[in-house]
Length: 348
Image (cartoon, rainbow, N blue to C red; front, side, top):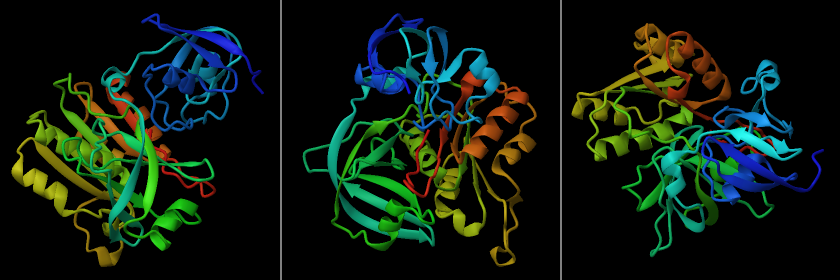
C-alpha cells in the first residue's frame, strides 16, 4: 500500500508541478490541481492516460494488462489513472488541450424522457435546471453520483450545441445494480446528481485528417455526439463510421447514420454484425467492426481514429491499426469496462 504523504510531481515538457498524496492516483491529484491530463476510462482499461515515469517510483495499482504490459512497466510507463506516487516524481505527459478550458461541475438533473430502443438499450434524456447549462466537448462523459458514494459513468450522446437535454445511451448489464434500476424502477421526473464533463475522448478540431469512428454497441453514443458536432460546425473532413453489434437489434438507431450519409457526401457508414441471426435477414458486413476497417484500409497512416467500445475491441484495434500504419498519437480511445458489482459503463 502506498504511504500517505505529500509528494511533488513535475510534468514534462510543460514544467507544471502539483502535490500528490500517496492515497490519490496521479490523475486525480492532477485534476484536483486544475491540470487536464489525457485520460479516458479512469480504471486502467483503455491506456489513454499512459505516460512515462522519468524519475521516482509509483505503485501501479489496478492497471490492466491489455492497457499496460509488463514490458511497458519495465520500460518506465504507467497508467496515471491507477498509479499512486511512492516518491517525488518527474512524469512525461501531454496536457489535453481543449479539455483544460472546460470546467468540471456537480449538477442535479431530472429524467425527462426514457425511450427503450432495444431490449437492452435505453435512451435517457436528462433536463438540467432552467438557468444552467453544461459546457462539454463532443465525446466526453458524465458520472452519476450515487448515495453510497459510488459512481456510474455514461457518455454524452448529444452535441454541445444541442444542450437543452443531455442524452445518454444505457445498456442493461446482467446483474448490474444501476442499469437494473434504469430498466426496472427508474421513472421520468426522477432526480439524479452527476459530475462532468469527464474524459479526454473528444474530436480534435485542429486536424484536417480524415476520421474513422469505430463504435461497439452503445459506444455509438459519443460517436453520435462527434458527428453531430462536426455537422453543426460545418466540418467537411471525411468521416467513416463503423458501428459493430452482435445482431440487428444492437444497431438501435439505424436510420440516424443513414440520414447523415444521405445529407452529407463526406460521411460514410458501415454497419457490422458479429452474430447475425437468420431472423435478422442481414445482407451487410459480418464479423468484427475493427476488422472491417482493416479490410477497407490497407494504409491508415493518413487517418485519425476514434474508437469507443469494450476494452477487447479497443486493445485489438490499437495494435492492429498501428500495424497498418496508424500513428499511435492519432488513436483516441474510449473503453467501456463493466463490472456487475458496480456496473458503470466507464468510458475511456
